[in-house]
Length: 600
Image (cartoon, rainbow, N blue to C red; front, side, top):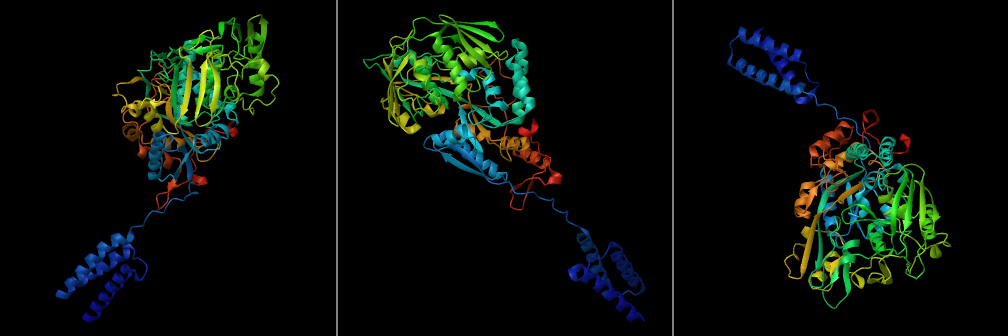
């Protein structure tokens, strides 16, 4: 009996060990407990050394049981993988700063499992994809500190109101949200400055949370010129030297009377109705007058207008300066002024579509007087319309049915600089218009195209040019600063480096996904490595340099990839075994689709 009983107990242990080893289903805790107890009883009945060895086996058996009962959690369901998207930027030759910034950003996004591909393109392709076609996915840009951008309406309404999402509009991101529209419409008609400031602060907070465009740095800009050949430029709060006031005031210090300005890339058009980028706009601003101009201190002042008077919240009367002539010798009249605004609105001049939305009509009411009637009150009218629209000679344009398609090879304006010639990708020449009411000091302005920033700066170093027609950071010109013939003027810009997300397309229509891209943006490395310290992190779309309008309660975005992951997980995104991001499944979809026609 003894040997049979012992044998059966041994068989029980063998069976238990076999089950644990994978020869059958895992034993339950109750089975393990039963076998162990029975084995212990045998030990008590007969003290056998070998039986003690069996106890050791059982003890190991109990330890194994803990592992057997551990069950891995099921993997969460996954949606479709997020497809690789293109990140459009400038080529390394044309704009090395922008190229390096976008490269670092793509690397950081890929580290998070977000599939991005760097797409360097030439400037014309960028204009076609972003400004003309609106078909890009992600677009790195530098918003230059142009005079029209000193009025916050440009940043808040022109670039993000839903009325500007069309092919000729300035809403590059395609952002469409009725609540935001109502907010920025309200600031346009609020005459009380303090109340308008409150609305503008709220609009800044909205865009900070929405991030259709991510402003990430305000550059420390450098205006640079050859102080041996020219001097005394008027410094502007945007580009310090190369600006309307600076070029007009540069004083020749030698017998050479022509300013030579270098470009890394050439202009694209001399047509004031078709202009679509800041470089061309600034060039044409030298040739075409406007009723007002943004003065060096940032205020809107009469220019071709002798006076600008608000008759009512929706009516303005302008008195034209007397004695003005076009470059072909014909007089500038009130009829020309009224024609300009009605024609630009009807034909939808690219740069002026948004500005002229609220214009009902312009009509001549006196020999030198024009009255502007608006569809509703529009507080930024002087700065955003009268200081932006180029005056056109009626006798040149009135018979042109499709003004956006004409080359305008011989532009006729009334500005202080007169067109002479343009040899594409080589050079272009403007000459002083002697009959202007405020002619430039220099006799001419020659733009020379070098094809790269390095080539342009090299020409300045060797004295072949006098200044440059580009936005440059302090870091870019530091190697030239010690040269005896170079003078550098420095400012912190009210423009910005930024990246557009085209919210017309998935996944960029999701506010949470856009925020995650911003949190995963390596701003510290960009400022330290690429900008070499010559930049400040950005937060609000209205820069701190625009001190009155800036919302100083909005902090700069910081680099926080862990928070980016948390946001994506909370929204239902997942990662596969290769670390690549997937969309949420329908049952786990907590994305915030905050933009699109479906909201209206």
